Image: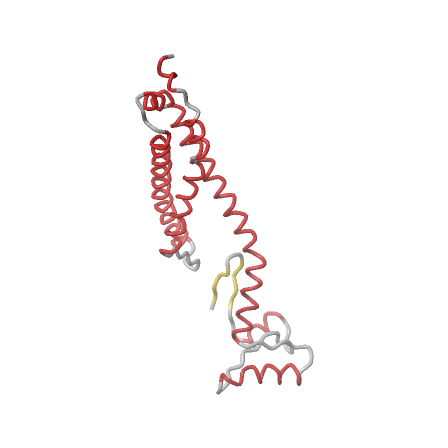
Length: 200
């Protein structure tokens, strides 16, 4: 039996086969025990560690926590850094897109101001541009993610890629937050627009 764990593969084989392959006839480094009564697991852990030297015994729950902690300590900081970089990159891209679109239409915003449009109304226009940019980017990103997941699972069948509705929701809300954050510079620029620009 074989499976993959993020950056490495592992296989399960019969203990005698493992000893033959590793040339270690008298060495065992991992033993699974199944108790008739699972409620005695903690008692058995204490008994094993007290009666056998140089071993570590774990219940299923403790073993799962230990493995999860190793993965959390090893990989989550990297994931956090990648997430922050992705957030900043998205904010810059959306910000540049919205800023460029705003600057190209600066005279039109001046006309709107000249005929009485309030800054609040102009801000809503910028927010709408930013939100539509993010919605379009989100749709393209979802399509790209599904395509990549399909290609990866076809090429490497043992690798499981699961994208849950919660992930989609988180990505969508994050893209909206990026949009609103990235709209700050264009909004400042519009607030400083002189309506007299239409007469120049």
